[in-house]
Length: 321
Image 1 (cartoon, rainbow, N blue to C red):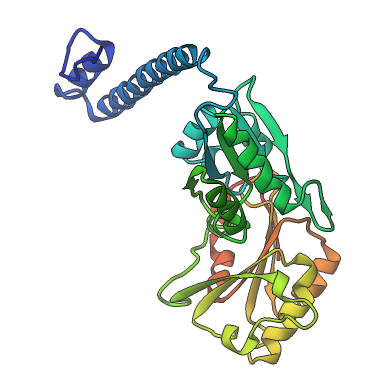
Image 2: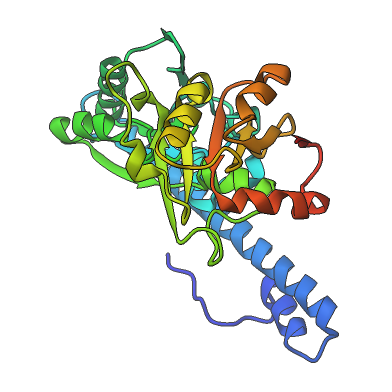
């Protein structure tokens, strides 16, 4: 049965919409309009769940979970951890998952959104300790999908930014599993937004580079000369224990001692903390006031804006400079 989408004043949502259009005071119209959208979403969700239950009931005798239809995998970015920054599409995939495979950096607010009864598979990694190696993660995703399940691979980063997305896509494609990528608000965007500054601006940075500090290993350093520019913002991921190599490399390539640097740990979360300094003193500041991982290193003229934006930095972030 297909329900008509025509306007019907007898439905609560349409009555609210009618009131919002009938010359109501602007503030009340906005409230009524928002409530109308909420009622519409709840109605859609109710119908969706009814359809889903009906589909499962019809499939229960047809081997849906044992050799029947193959499921699909959504590779979902959970962002920097704050539940309120999760995208609507990501929330939709989580709410309709049969199994969730998640990382160490997925925040508790996001994990709390996984419905009761959904399978959970922890595959977190920390420096020097991987609970499951990358090949096993790919094998797990394929196995779950072959059981006919809707699988969410929940990554505590933007999946396409240093999240080893390519390897998981390769495993799924090789197995012929349908998949989709659901992006998120990146850690770099979250960190700068929380500190009240842009990643780029016309006066300080006309370009942006995202760099993995994993390059800063013996024999594998970045091209410091190409990075030592004054017209762009550099964001180093996974670089807290490589800070000394980064500051030395950039100074050696020509950036001045007083070039602005900012460290942001746990961006957007209640325990967020930051340090603001320069290429010449940030190592000492970190030694005096250690920060935890994950921590971003942001280098460039945009960091100089932090001093003028402290009044707008959301609590309870701690800013040390």
